[in-house]
Image (tube, rainbow, N blue to C red; front, side, top):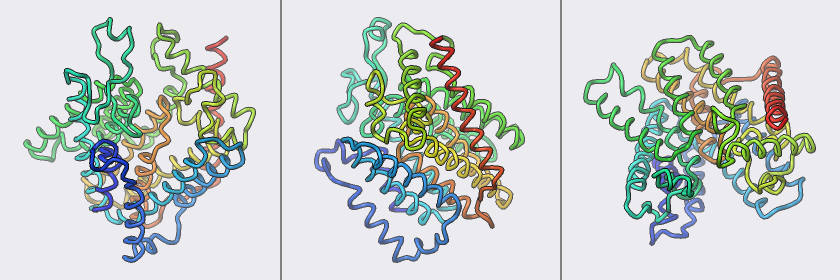
Length: 420
């Protein structure tokens, strides 16, 4: 568990980015070699063989990103793309090798919540600080004249990969589901009160980010949890999730309006339109990861992970990405009938809700970060505990293809209507 804790601290709190004596430490250069050698010499890495379907899809997905990037003209971001995706394959395998029991998985979730709580405190203090500076000296984000005139003071953000308010909200929604079961019975009153207090702190910190994608993800997480507590059937949850996914995918940032004074919604739809055009012009390999902003009118990212993947890695890349998410959720589903302990079942459901919240957020922010692959590795680790890990049938592959086609048609139609 040491490596998981070390990894989460360097990812979420990231002291190497702001603590004076740790500045410029290349933490990954220490962490991953040591973690790999530990997994290798303890035999844990070998015990993950043979590879399962989700393992192969994960490797295929990262390999396709690398290939599509290599085929396209090189850019300043190309070297980083290769390094990140090779590292993420390694991260996936190491997490899978480390979390080999339900007990280990639940401990990892505990540390995820505990470490995220540190930045929850930071986010609240940052918003309330008189000088507007956070622990790392970062300023509030999105401080525009309209906000100041309305009496606001900007939105909280962190550093590293969480330096934007929308992305910062994601780390909160990632950990939030694991708190929810402790707010209800059969846990004792003290535990429930502590969990409710922590839940309130998370919600306040989320509100201070001002992220509408984060708010929608939070509403989705709370809604899915209530449906689970009400014992709504799994198939109904899948239907509700699919419908919600389609609605959210087509919705602009301003949910009640297709025009706004700051042009935020319009710019977002323009970026989506650019991504659709990239995919149509380059359907197989896309324009290459790290090159999306070079093909847009405003030199920005898509603010939608699926569209950005479609534009930069083509339709095969989008197909592999959706397949990876599908298999992650299916890995949880196939494990549930074989879990007897109700608290373990609850944990598995919360892991699924956490991933679902991430998917909702990814419709409003580009979230191709290692946080996703850490979650996917946890899902794959749960799937390994089932007698037979999740596989794919021809019918499921066709279904995934239909989902991809439907997503493209809905987005294309929405954009045509929007600008029509």
